[in-house]
Image 1 (cartoon, rainbow, N blue to C red):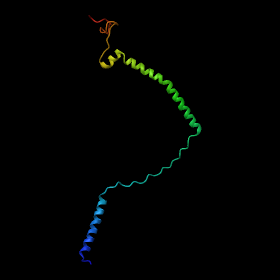
Image 2 (spheres, helix red, strand yellow; image 1 turned 90 degrees about the vertical axis):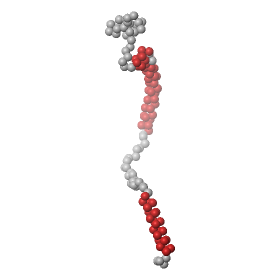
Image 3 (tube, rainbow, N blue to C red; image 1 turned 90 degrees about the horizontal axis):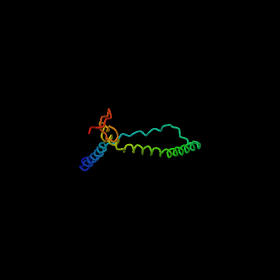
Image 4 (cartoon, rainbow, N blue to C red; image 1 turned 135 degrees about the vertical axis):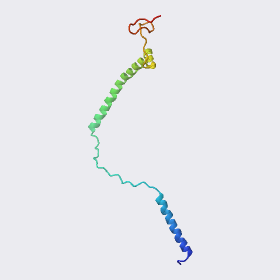
Amino acid sequence: MASDPDHVLDAIDGVVDEWLAMSEDSMRWAPPEKAPPRQRLGLPAPPLPQIVEGILQEVGARTQAVVEAVRPLGEGVIEAFAAVLENSPVRHLIHAGPRARPPHGPAGHGGGGDPRTGAPPDG
């Protein structure tokens, strides 16, 4: 039976199939296996005592009351800044840039004049 061609062909087919299976596995990439994380020793956190929970709730309530009391003050400050920034001369300074100078001179003359002496503009 050793000279039987079917036996030789079956042996060759088996070797080829085995080689194909092994080569496909060797071509497949797998990340290296990581060791499982070690458990760290730690103390369990005990629940808070009832008195601490009560203190935290009281502090939270008082903090909320302070925030509500101070909120109108903050809103007033914001409104005051908005009113100042909406003022025409201030808006002129903001939009004109750092080199712009406000108009000088006595009131009612529309500005101009000599800023050193306060003399009215020529005209």
